[in-house]
Length: 195
Image (cartoon, rainbow, N blue to C red; front, side, top):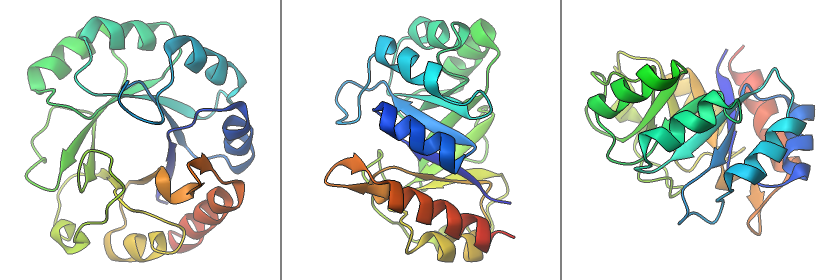
C-alpha cells in the first residue's frame, strides 16, 4: 500500500488532524526561506503532540550536518529529508552521526544511485508543480512521489506508478493553511487506490 506524507505541518491543529487521519509520515520544514518554516523549538512542541506511531521528518535545504544530526538525535524528528545540494558524502557523514533514515529529494533525473535510504522525486524544489509522471514508469528504486499532488490527481499517480509513498503539502491547503477536509480526502483516495 502506498504510504502518505503530509508535509509542512505548522500548527497543533495540523498535528491533531494528522493524529486522526494517521499518515505514515509528517514533515516539519526547517528551511528558513519556506513559508512553512518552523523553528526547532516549535517543532519539538509539535512532535510532542504527534502520535509516536507517525514518523516525523525534518525537511532541510543545505543545512549544517551537525544541526540536522542534533534534531535527529534529540528525537524531535525521526528522519531527515534533504532538498538542497547535499551529496553522498553529506549523507554518509550525517548517517555516521545519527544512524536515522535519510530521504534525498531529486528533480526528475537520474537519482537511482543515491546513497540515501529513500529518494523523493519532485518537479522542482518543493514548488507544488506536477511533472510528467511517465518519466518514472521504469524507475528501479522505491521513491516518494511529490510535486503538485492533490486529492483529485493522487489516485491517477498511484494507478500509473504505485510509488512507495506520496508527499503532499500545498495540495492539502486552503489559503495557505492545512485543510482537514482535503487532508482526509487525500488519505482516503490514496488508501482506496492502493488496495
